[in-house]
Image (tube, rainbow, N blue to C red; front, side, top):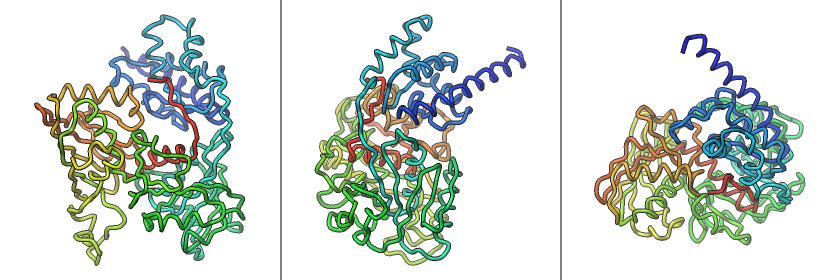
Length: 478
């Protein structure tokens, strides 16, 4: 192909991606339909991101998906009365073109595949959400909730609760939302309403409330009712502490973004969210590491059976560590986080049993904090009931990542060059590094990357939807 033809081909793809963008926006805003390509979201995606999402299809199925071959399916979506669902247009298009030679059957095919979401009379009312705390996870949850703005959005971020309230605090909080050293700038517009103590982000009006205790707030005075309070502080982890939130007027349920203690249900979305009952008022979304490893462990246990194993976590440092050597109540964590690898304990391996009871007592775990600000890795060393090898277990896990109930939790990479910074912004609970897999006989060692901030926040949003009984199908069905 000549140089001019390469440029012409690129130009055609670019124009196709540009043609998709307004359709994708309208589908979400008007119908609540989120379009993805083999799990890669196209909502608010740039033209380059749309092109890259299509290029990655070849790595999954061994064949290209051209933009000109997927655009007709997006156009067909706009003609169908589809509501409140996630549609993987990549999988639908690949399956269609394997069976048909032209678009003559396209509308009928789409109607059949999306039948469960067409003319769906799902009239769920929008639910109020309050973020209690606005640290690393709180700000990423805010980004995720705001990017889904629109009349069809059923998760409405109504307020953020903070301590303090000193002069200049509001602008500083807004600035931290606008800019992030790890995750980059906020995709949109952020302004401050000083008079009313509010932040307006992409048209979402967010009331800022200053309080020193969860039980001293009257949310109803801000028009907030039956709200889900998402506690990002990590201060309270048991029923007694988290129950303080429920004493505030307008609060109905509480979600903790950390492992819960006592009888609190620890939920890993995609694995045991069915355990959430309508009467549950306090739920934990477990830890980032538990979310990363549990889906992979479930997949492996279902196929091969796990006798026992050990999980070693190579974890980026967090803000509970010190920048320079100073006092810390925990062992070793007082030493400078940017300068040291720090051995520390983790309960993530044992916590897996709260989501997967069949692994009770079978796993041990430890952690090493390392001098990177985000993205971590779990090294899962397992003894299995059934023998396997690298090719076999990788093929199995690739299929689980693409075509199973865990497709939104497990991602799969075959790259020999991927490093931790490449995974910043990953929306998956964990990403299996297949090139690093070691398997022989009844022993397997799996390497799972995870964005311990953003990937975990995506899991938290899933738990939020389940707690609020918001039905959101993923299509096509498996």
